[in-house]
Structure formats: C-alpha cells, structure tokens
Length: 300
Image (cartoon, rainbow, N blue to C red; front, side, top):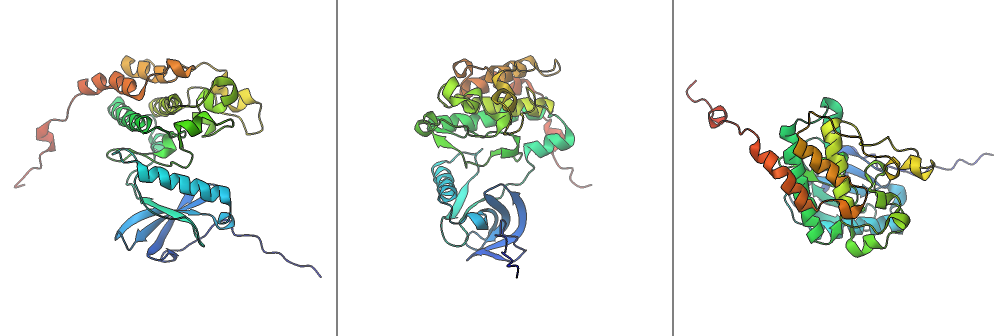
C-alpha cells in the first residue's frame, strides 16, 4: 500500500474577501518573494487599502524569517521620510505573521523602464535628487538599506523607496561577512566584504548609482551577473569589470554624478548630499511648465 504525503503549502493562495487577520481582508495577490506573499488588502482599522506582507505558510515557524520580519518592522517604525514607504501595523506571530504597509500608487521603476525604455532627463534628474534625499536621511539615521534597485523604487509623486527586509544599522553592516542584497546592484564591498572592507553607507550610494544608470540607459553598467553557483568574478562582474561609459546624450553633470557614485573604492564615492548637489543645478536649469498650460479652461 502506498502512503501519500501531502506537500506543504508554500503560498497562501487567498481569494478576494478572505481574512488575512482580524480586520484585514485580502483583495488580490500582488506577488512575493521566497519568504513572503504580498497582498493588496483592506484594513478596517485604517479604513483604507494597504499592502500586507505575509510570511509564507511553510515558514511561519522559521525563527530566521520571523526575526527578519521583526527587523523590517523595527526599521519602518523608526523611519519617517517623504520618499520612504510607511509601515502601519505588524503581527509577528500566530498563524499568519505579517506587516501592513502603505499601498503606493504608481509602477515600479523596473517595470517602467522595461515597458517604455530609459527615462528622459526630465524624469531621471528629479528621481536622482529625491532618492539621494532618502539615502541622506538613512545615513543620518545610521541605517543602510542594502537593496536599492529599480524594483524597490515606486514611481509615484514623490517616488518611494520600499523593502527594508535586509536593511541594517551601521554596526550590523560592518560585521557582515557574507553577501547581502541583490547581485546586480551590490557594491563591490557587498559582494566581497572580507576582501573589500566593511559595508557602510557608501554601499547605498553604489546601489543608487546603478539604479540611476539603469533608469538612464535601460541596462546595467557591467555584464549581467552569473548564477549563484558561478565563480565569484562571474557572479559579480562589478568586482572585475570597469563601468561602461554612459551615452553622450545624457547631460554631462548627470553622467558625472552617476559615474562618481560607481567608484570602485567606497571612499571615492560621493555622500548622498554631494550627489544631490551635483544634480540640483541640472534640475534648476530645466524648463518649468508654463502656468497658462496648467490652468483649466473655464466656460468652454
């Protein structure tokens, strides 16, 4: 006689109207990663649409995953900046551990570039200034995001930086001996911390630089990373390849700012404030929309 063993559930597969937790109702699944499902949901307490980030069913007793969720919630509680996503609530144990964050209108930068191609300067430069503002704030708070990338950038008004699941304090980041982040956007010291030195706020400047480079060109500033099993220099080409020069059509001051942020040595990269200062004059020189074009036409 053959005994059938049920496979463990790896996703919640909730339908519209299903309860995530008391007072929190699923509307639709947005996606997720290896550890979490993300649902558009309605919060009775807030009487508003939110996003619920829910630990996947087979991981609800995984202490490492639960510590990660608690760490992300701690980060969101202590951060308050116009360009950083807000957190509203958390249930860190029970049948469906989750955090509740704001629902942000607008596409991810990654989706926008994939669908429509590189951003024009009129979008790219304000984006750079606003993201640099967020990184400057994080630096003053003693935090490194460690996963700044287009898919963690929501193109709203203003844009928002999301996903603090791997963010660390300066002290925690300095003690990291393994890799942390997304391969294509890791600073050299993130990809090889034991050889390149401790991880610090300059790593976020690198991530911002790669994000802006991709927004400006549609591609990475070096080869596509190899598989997890590839040799180190193939998995992280940024360890050995020079950054590909930007196109001549991009304003020189913008090119200089992006390339400066992609200096191999962390000490040679700008601070977020210096990066913003480099971009601000370009932003100030851009044509402003004429007021007459913005006024509604009345009586017609």
